[in-house]
Amino acid sequence: MADTLQFDLVSPERSLASLQATAVQIPGAEGDLTAMPNHAPLITTLRPGILTVTGPEGTSQYAVTGGFAEITAEATTVLAERAYARHSDHKPAIEEHLESARKTHEGASGEEKDLAAKLVADLVKLLEDME
Image (cartoon, rainbow, N blue to C red; front, side, top):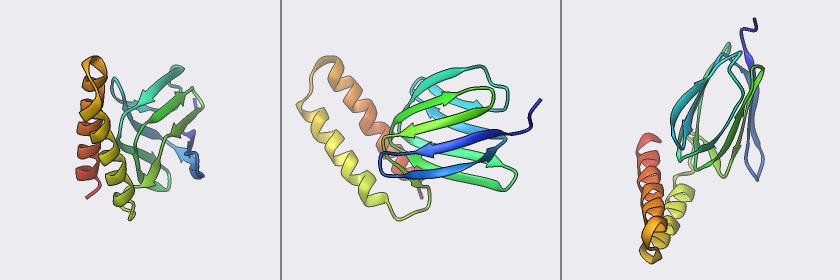
């Protein structure tokens, strides 16, 4: 039984992390989940939130705005829309994404409006959590 799993976090711009982890807390679209070694295979979409990686070298946190996570017994790979170190100076980029989501919400109707409202709420919470 393995004590760690391989964790990789990539965004369209770059690879942000590649390290051994004992647990990865993921902001899943259907709710938060924690991937650990020997986890059952799973693919999930992400909502905006804080991704926390715990490993032998300590804990790292990243702000993600969406994307996908693939979990297996040996590895967790996160393909993020956008991802930043939690305490980095990237709030303006997330605020820009929030403004775009608000505009989408204003012009939407029906189920699309509900989804846009959820995205706005998740991005607002993400900005609060980045403090």
